[in-house]
Image 1: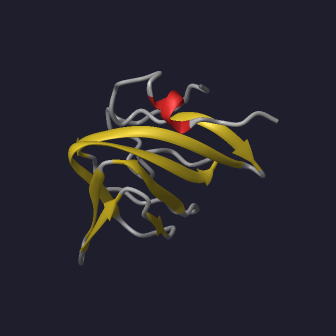
Image 2: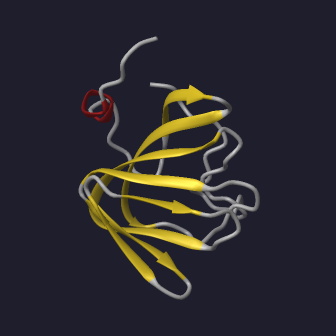
Length: 120
């Protein structure tokens, strides 16, 4: 049992769209990621995803609407819902999702797909 300092962990990487695992519990991963620009449209057939904004702000686009998220706010994207994160400026997010969750969901052909995530 060790505490995790999110600000310290965020200093350990600078690339975008490459989540790092910072904790695990009950088959779930707690991840940190930095986002900038547009991600790919995708969905997850079997997993819900939680996005918590640690620093900055971003928009989660859905086919029928857009949700703006700021520091301290989170959004849960239910399984099966197509979505695309968009960050005009760099944003740091905490993700909470099942360990089986592939970052690009049904779009495993994307060059942004990460099959193996680093623990930090």
